[in-house]
Amino acid sequence: MKTHAPLPDAARLNWVDRYAPRSLQPWLKLGRLDRPIGIWLLFLPGAMGLAFAIAHPFFANNLDGTARLLPPQDVLRYHFPWLKLLMFAIGSVLMRAAGCAFNDFVDRDFDAKVERTSGRPIPSGQISPKQALAFAAGCCLISFLILIQLGWLTIALGAGSLLLVAAYPFMKRITWWPQAWLGLTFNWGFLMGFATVTDTLTLPALLFYAGLIFWTLGYDTIYALQDIEDDAMIGVKSSARALGRHTVTGVSLFYGAASVLTGVAAFLAGLPQLFFVGLLLVTTHLFMQIVRLRPDSSGERWEPALALKLFKSNRTSGLIWFFSLLAVHFTGFLNT
Image (cartoon, rainbow, N blue to C red; front, side, top):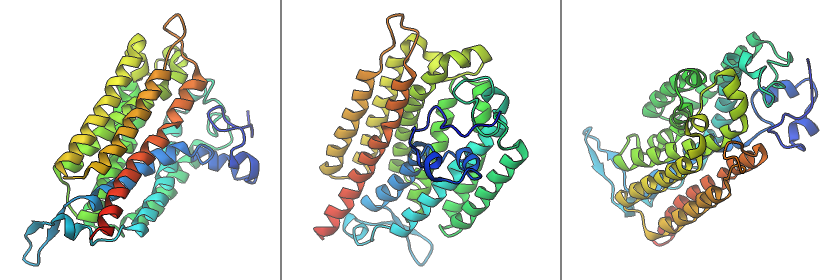
């Protein structure tokens, strides 16, 4: 059954349904361009990786092939890589579209049985499975052309991300924690952004990446609450189902780990107090999500609209993290 109505988790007045030609709407919806929150959550870790690299000392290669640690005053002479930020933004749109198309191809039978996803382009018959695969391949090809501009380590990391993307749709079939795998996948851009600037990976960068994994584990557990009943009926696993009545406690621990690990990373990287002011704001924002995350009186049912709203609010968390790192760079740069 074909439909051009807005999908349940898209804004009623989203730009695709309002302005895009009818013939393009199924393709844009396949790539989730009617729901840009996923693009934001994929883009922001990469942006943070760029900002984290430019905000703290990193290794530079000497002519003899050895490496040396640049002091903060030398790091601050680097200008923020705005062109690379733009490349990451475009790549995020393309890889989000590719990943969603592949995910919908794999999950097409499941999606047809879930109320929230039954109207997606593949289960509704607007796009065939083969067309969806061709769409995903085309997005990957364009992304590759961007990737090869970013250095060998970043290219290798980008190639490795394809394994994470390809495996994700199958995780909900084999583990109760597919949200953890999504955390590995969605935040891989942080490592790529950091490597793009530094051509290396450091312990602080790896710890910050680990913190972002827990962030995703938290917000995607909230997102999974929308489908918890349908998932139970068709046998789809999720962290929301695994946690059950302990979902609020679980999300609290995930968000707490995110704040602690990114804070430790910043401390080891020698970031100034300004970043920790931003981190306090991030932690407060995450805590307010937890305060609002409550089931009904039975303790078993969750309000889908509230879960979606809290999930979407994580764009704000990511932006605060990013601008906190950006502020460190620019305040330091202005003082040199």
